[in-house]
Image (cartoon, rainbow, N blue to C red):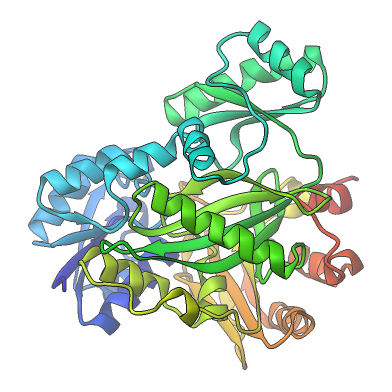
Length: 448
């Protein structure tokens, strides 16, 4: 078991990892930028080092600075959390070359799954259904048009190194495809340093369902069932829940086993999320693998009773998974609302600034994961999420009622948040009845 771990992240996920390490008896080393200096959660770490100025490119993304902090802190492992360097195969390699374990997959598996085109090929080998797509990368408008005319419009342009909706465009005709192709390539190059794209047949009004998987170094891989992430805006998730209301028990079992099979095919270790879309006929198709812990991992924790952060650490240290597939049972229903410092009435404009008062809800089945507190200043440099509100109840109806009650209790004064939009969504009859898809929010709440 490790004695000291460095957390190569900030905010909510850094605090989450610190807490898990404390319970495992592991000391922690935190890092921070100048913008995060003095953050209260840093006091819970055993040591904390500044890694640079406010901008992420000069601090949290500066590999040399992170490694220096790890070496000064005398750690045996680094947990990357999510975002920043979490899916950077080069950083993964650097950690291991410095004799520091990376709490995640091996670099080869991360690189293979991080390339969406290579991941599609891997899925095909594992006999996992994939959306009809181009054979290799699209390098010219003529090549794109040829594919679109073969499979039919609309088509989806996707960056091979993409994430969070960047480098992604939908086109419904020839003219739109030419324009969208240029936009997607330029956006992907700017965001990821890689402008390569490929095309897929666009599945209209799909559900977004993902499967949590974890694998150890002893050949064991277990899925922890699925999460439905269909409530999103511009490919950014707002609400996640488990179980999904959009699939049958037979499809659930088949999809989850397909995810486990894919992870085994990739020789993958540690936590991963295998993402699928589900069409109107209930058919599911693989879209990508996130080779890290996800923001919405508490949803899975609530319905399975398994602490995923602890399991990540134990698996990375060489321990076997302490449970088998038969041991993992979905119990009850969990819902997570991302609490973002954004103003929905102003096109989700970020709302940084001082939180004058924060009152977190409580009660049976309510969990609030956040580093924020009264007096905390939300910096303008990073993701706008300040916390995650999670509820767990025996049924979906009860979970919705508890979430609405918890949202009504919550107070975040001094900045704007998406709480009012969450209340609208959860109060809508279509959400209550499970009649949602990835376009639900924009069609229902963003139309005016």
